[in-house]
Image 1 (cartoon, rainbow, N blue to C red):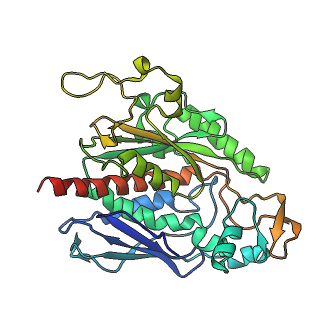
Image 2: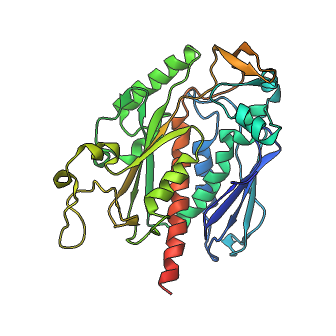
Length: 354
């Protein structure tokens, strides 16, 4: 299987399956001499881990990171950083009913057709549990760029949206509720909606907005490696993501150029920021903001028609522990992938300054 690595200079390769012995990764290109804050890394893992509230999967995993290499006396050495995250709460029998069946909108069918074999326990390599390794790498990437502030939050669940611009939100409130929405009133509505959806055996999707501040000018490599293109690729690589837009996004397509242009101030900043902090594929120093759409989780606690490996259709109901809405736990994953993109471009940009 190809496609298990991301990045050019700051590069992460992940490995492991949802119900294997462990997940893990190898980080290459981390600058030497970086004093790591291991507490901050584990805190990011706590934000992503399962079983953290009543509105997410109840699988219980400590998700404690064990570093194997690339660190000496608390500092990075510049050599590959190897790490593992042990799986401790697998219930593989929960998936025996899908051994010969392909769940709708899952990777089951295409994995078996492509590779001739699949690990059906929790989806194996296609499980969103793989993203735990990305969060470790992203937490380290954030420490390479300590002045850059990355804040993601849940901006919608189903038809419930935050009706305020991000400039009016207090990002410190994002972690104050299990939905990870920084608007208290909206968060309460979202949480209640997710609970109702869960009771009915169904699932619901939503969106995550990410705001990146204090970004230096010059990150991004035209023509094919534009900053927004890499952010889009990074976000679309996350399980369940169905869409990405930055700046004015699709709304910008409805505007006239006279309405959409970001006019300059004398200091090089712009009066508006419909460009979303990126022009010509390069960061311009303004806030970068984008929105990521997540589909409803495909596993339902309801009966559905499924295809068998004998090419027959049977009725099957989901079992096991699953998220009724993935977006609350995906917030740190979005931040991690954004950090990986920015750190990679930051290190690339430094090569021009030598």
